[in-house]
Image (cartoon, rainbow, N blue to C red; front, side, top):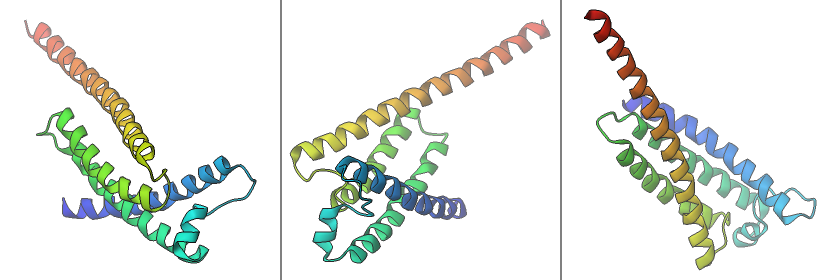
Length: 155
């Protein structure tokens, strides 16, 4: 299990860098001046140079991705209910993501930005939970049908 956690964290770290790159593209597109910003312009001002901002964002993205990668093991806890898995994953990932989003300026630094951040997170998790629930329900129904067929054929 420890080895799998390390593998997931390593894969998550790579994914974290990829996600931060996509976010940079989205932020650049939203600013709409035709320039690619590797990091949010305000982060450059905060850090004093573009290089320092990019290094910080890359390092934080590695940690961010590793947290998500490690948290993915929660979905394999068969002794937990889907609701417990979802809520635990939500708490871990939102606590890992919030400081990153705030520090990297991926969200507005005001009450509305914070409420919007958590609102989006909750909506995403509601959708994730719904799809996981429906998928699990479908698998259970197929298992029950298989058991019923065997039971009927044994009679």
